[in-house]
Length: 254
Image (spheres, rainbow, N blue to C red):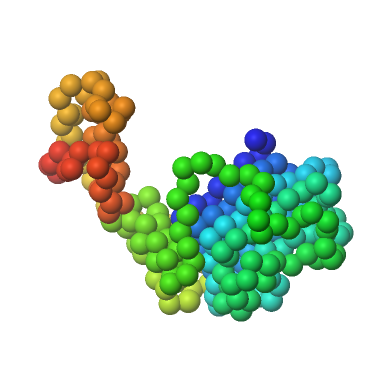
């Protein structure tokens, strides 16, 4: 597969990230909450389907929630497929859509999609995925399943979030905040929209005691060391797994 990207399970706001853009190759956008791009707080469009050098593109767009926030400026549908003008998609491209939700447009598979220059034959599908990976777990948008999952488990340490992560989660829940231009103010009008500077985070040191026989392979195929590391990762995610030790070794703070 060429030029592949995934955006699983994370809330997105238009601050400092680019609207997902397909320009050839294959990719998936799944189980996402998108704010202020066309992602939660849609600034322009949420997903911009286009191409470079007349390359075909194949995309599977499944289980995404598109919400408007204070900074949205366009009323286009969230999945924006260019079928005319510069960078227009070419014949042979395929886009599969299923279970994507935007409150303004409803839940019908094609209701969240616009083709800018009219229908391109064979482009849009609701029955056959042109690209996928086995082993992915999909969440449904119904009953806020995707929304709640993303807000519960987004970020590197959802069980121990820093101030920046907490701010983003709060903005998504309360539909406030806005797209920012700068990390901090520099006296310019442009940087009046800023994040208030880099957060100051506590520095922590922990003494770790490795598991015994750490190079031995456990019944699940991982080494004892790998299972121990997995369990630490699951701890900060707020998750547990039967494939890892039931509890991580205690860590003493120094």
